[in-house]
Length: 173
Image 1 (spheres, rainbow, N blue to C red):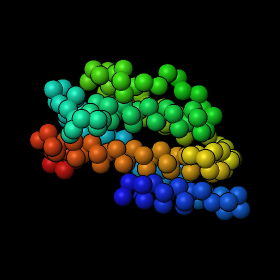
Image 2: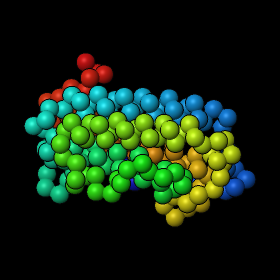
Image 3: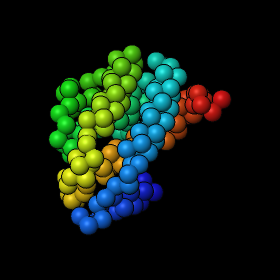
């Protein structure tokens, strides 16, 4: 299902140059979707007790903390590698290197602030400029679409992890 959702989003985003126009309200819509997901992720991460941070559903699967650091890494990586916006931090290895809950919460929040800065810095012309994403030619706004889709994919994973640890997502209480 995850591959199908990602493939559909990329297929919709990866249109040819003649159709690469983002709607005039893309920036506002993206910001609303991103902020709603970011608030949920941070609230859920804060609700997870420290003793659950290293929990994983089975061997070989990302832990609670690794999932949050994976999201943070991609919040820096997509703008850096696909939008030409340098990351203010070295993000490679977040999943392995950042295991302290408090540090991870700071890194996660900072990565979301970075995405907001990137969005603010991009002109409408830059949104339409071509780039590469997973081997495809797309407009840069499609990278932002992929970024929020990626974040939401792992929000769902984090909700499942929380419920398996007896944590009710704060917004559904």
